[in-house]
Image 1 (cartoon, rainbow, N blue to C red):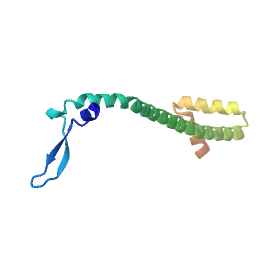
Image 2 (tube, rainbow, N blue to C red; image 1 turned 90 degrees about the vertical axis):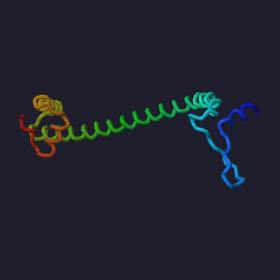
Image 3 (cartoon, rainbow, N blue to C red; image 1 turned 120 degrees about the horizontal axis):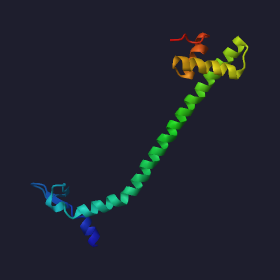
Image 4 (cartoon, rainbow, N blue to C red; image 1 turned 180 degrees about the vertical axis):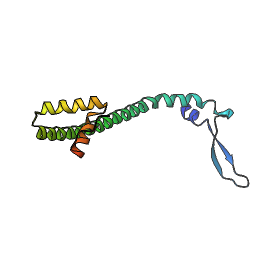
Length: 132
């Protein structure tokens, strides 16, 4: 019973002028009567904190999984383009897959560009990009 009364300590009532109706009034932070509720708010916050922490942790896990999925998608697309570029070089120069990959890697390092960009240029144009 005392807890129920303490929980209601921050709610007063106001009477409308000219009517007999009463409506609840919630007192703000600056109110003198709000004092007893500070402990109740802290208690509620302490009980709520673990649930909020779980929700936040789940959000971070979800975002990490989403980022990983996006990175894997990019990696799969990059691999496909690189394999196509290797195939172009293998057919054109009659070389092995390893030699084709080495040629792409050499062009990538020589031009300081990403391997997938070199491969994409080769697939789109049929030629390795010119040295810068």
